[in-house]
Length: 153
Length: 153
DNA sequence: TAAGACATGATATATCGTATCATTAACTTT
DNA sequence: AAAGTTAATGATACGATATATCATGTCTTA
Image 1 (cartoon, rainbow over the protein chains, first blue to last red):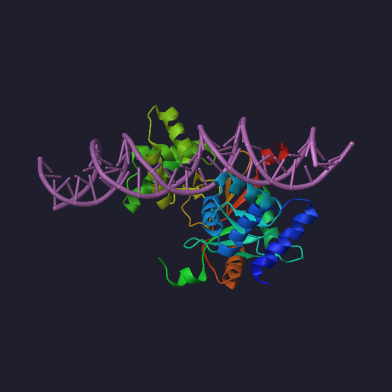
Image 2: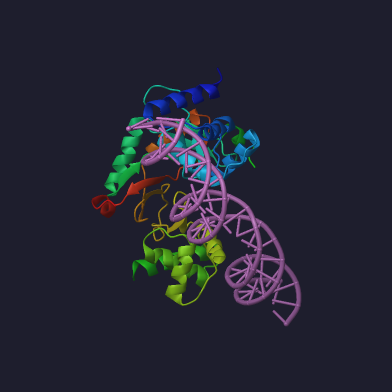
């Protein structure tokens, strides 16, 4: 069973449990993110969809579908890049730490990593000292991936 | 001497040293950011400019001016909010740690804080372990400011 | 003062995203 | 199975952010 079909399988079970529907279109959009292995914008996903499934989808639908997938924690939105990635832990069963994203500024490759809780706690404390409240400790970091670091633009 | 004119004064000296020109328009845009005390988009700045100085400026010029001010480290771009803030350390003489931004999701208030170098080093190590290279350790964190935390929407 | 560099104006267009209303598909209940 | 309800999608319009490009203006310096 491929990684992708395994993830789709898990997504389906997840939706069944949560009483939501993983429709064909939603599955297709998720497939696009899983296949592409990088962050895609809603419009890029619409293009991918058209090419992959020979069927056009309006970008608005893609936005709605992404919002749904995000609410089910199957997809993460990268606010820094205005793009979306499939959650790299779809198929895991265990609970996860807050996701942290490394975004390659060159090729949009994205790596999702975990970060020691102590580091996040330190961060929270720093923020609290400034009188602010940390809403989301989901960090998004400007990076270069291994390949792009080797052969800079 | 007000905080703002002090900052402007410093900016002028800074540009003289770096051999660049702090034109009237550039000074006006910087003034806008200093006065507003929060993050503004390029278009919001164009509006502010028009009201404050009774003179219209095309948004394109604002973008160019912001790019200039950023290259001189007088202004920071917040990629999360697509807005811009004046560097809160314009008037300081000492070298600074990498700036970290706390962005209030409600009212766009922005606080610029420093973060212990050890924390950033830990972060860098985490990133390196994932095979990535941290390009910019400038974090932008989704927060609530003190006021908005008290009276949530 | 003429030449070149730098700064700005003006226009068009790309990209990301939201709002709104109409339509279709899917579940539910009897 | 038919009617009614809810959920999902299509379609259109629009707003905001941002870039590309070419023309024009303004300093600077020899």
